[in-house]
Length: 175
Image 1 (cartoon, rainbow, N blue to C red):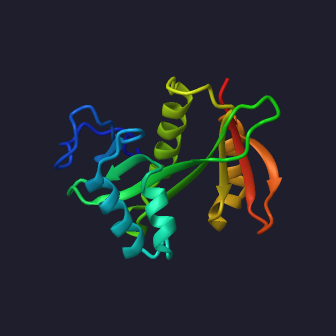
Image 2: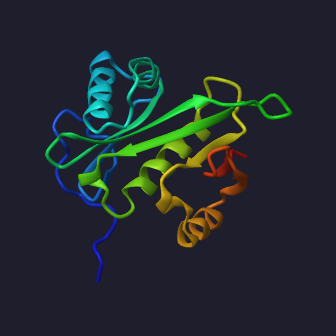
């Protein structure tokens, strides 16, 4: 029998007791409260894994952090970010979502948990006008497979075609 998705193991060093756990990975929301230390750590993480190559992009994305995932030993394992995308016809914002998980930490369903936690947090955000939803760009080839497509459709994501690079575009409506 496979292990259960959630684990009640110890919290990673430095994370609050409120951070949810997924297979001993702590998932910490930092949206609208990211610190300079977290931003610096995120930038170093992206450079270490060659996920971002330009300093201006890394700096900008460090301000767009939503969730940080930490491995059981406390090191940074993954990040999610959002930027404001195009507005809908009715004037509501759409978040452009990005996720990066270190190769060693790409355990089953961690990306799904980070994506869902990020989506739910953004959907409940009441500090600004309600957003229309979140757009996910499937930039990893594994995200174009039929199993992932069925999963996204089952969980309310709408396929919106392909971008200029031939990547699938998905939209998670809020509302």
